[in-house]
Image (cartoon, rainbow, N blue to C red; front, side, top):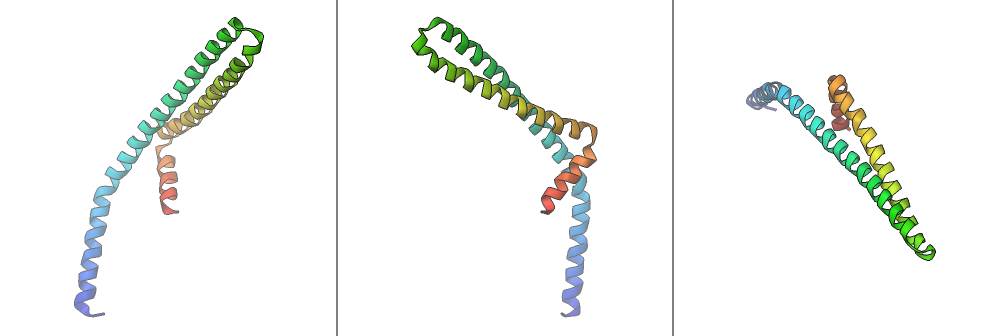
Length: 120
């Protein structure tokens, strides 16, 4: 490799390192902000699923009580679906709460885990 080429490559690498050092704090702030709002959205989705599942369960139970015995099987399946929906929403909500707590209480740990996922 010629001397001029190696000097040019070194200058480009130094310039790239300077840009990376300048942009790194902004990238970390944006990742924390994105993770926070993404987690809040997931939490809201989980809560909506849970509340919707409970309301569907109550509706199916009420309708089942009003129907004849041979029609009750359909509403029993509806109750199972509604209960499954609310349980799944609760699980999603719990997972999102733990992520939200990590972002708020230990942002460096959250960023380290994010960096490790990027490195894979």
